[in-house]
Length: 506
Image 1 (cartoon, helix red, strand yellow):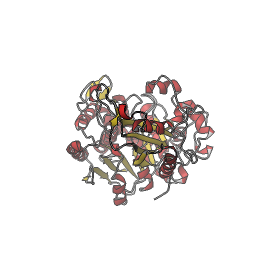
Image 2: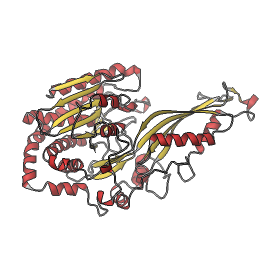
Image 3: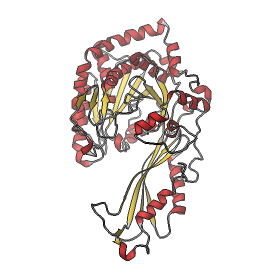
Image 4: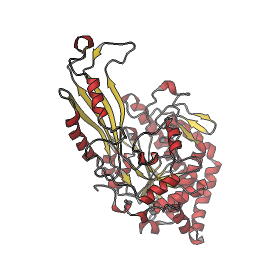
């Protein structure tokens, strides 16, 4: 397995990034695809599928509704049956649209749905990844409608999983259906891999890829689990932050004790934890862990200028967050702080009495959920070691501390000028009427690393969600114009890949 991103995907040289004057890889795509020799067969390939998709747009939406009704929450055994039934429904639908080979592959956890269409020997192969599991629905009281009863409100479809990720993976399924129904075959070979454990860190996905490496061989992979900037402005993500998710637990006593009898005489676990957490950041928002920034790959001047021209500005990001003011490293923009800079976040704290009224106790134990978002060239295991060493220094005397790691994922950095990304840029422009911008994301999709490192695939992150789609939150939604244009984008993407294999493999 490779130790990190392939060398050709690194952005250490300014020439590898769209120049600061606003030119982007989509300009290259347009230049390559202007000639009649290239565009004409591509248009002939896509047109029947596009017409079919347009005529069946309302039926596509109806097909999506039963998929969204499954409460396929993967993080609880109480929903295990629902997750498995969702996988079976998805497999049945893939068979229904005409994919010849469909399997539900069991794992030690939730199953993986695999479907292939390899009817075109000698043509390139696209692997389509998605996940059919969803986040929990808490807090339920904040939902305006039942989370697993899809409701259409204006141009939005409200339901858990509508945007993350059932709606996004489903648009690729409908693009495949459009080709199969309109032309009888696909312009390229396709392998679909849909998992049911992405929301819990994909614990069995890497093993599945290793066990089926030969069967899953492809030329590229596409993942649609990211966001656009707005309904009018698509975006291609070429980098994502890594993740180190942990829980820090401290104990000061064998059990809770009376605060009147012992207050001021023994250490309080809640206070000890607070003292530790307070030393993880400086007042300016810098992470204080020694060695934390030692291997941060700095963004280049061209890249930062491109972000300044195309990325969301401070007011937009504060508005999306619902925050009154910014916080963090002042020498970087808010977008840069959330994409090209690492971060440490305290996700939750549990300690002491949580009931109504008061209770005079000194808590014996306390815990905090902590996540670190990492950037190239940070290594999760190395950062974990730095944190453990720092805890030895800052944990107060007489306090027992334990750090438990829940998940690790390496950061990802890909080339925005890779031919597959150029094909994606072309497809977005044809479907949305504008060229996409190329951005980095602050989020983490761990499977992208698995696809790159285990299968050695270039990965295109082609998202159709919006910043206000409330992914992971109550009232999650899917903007339906994005869904329908997304189907068209996927159709154009497959057509473009079929006609530029030579450029992609050079």
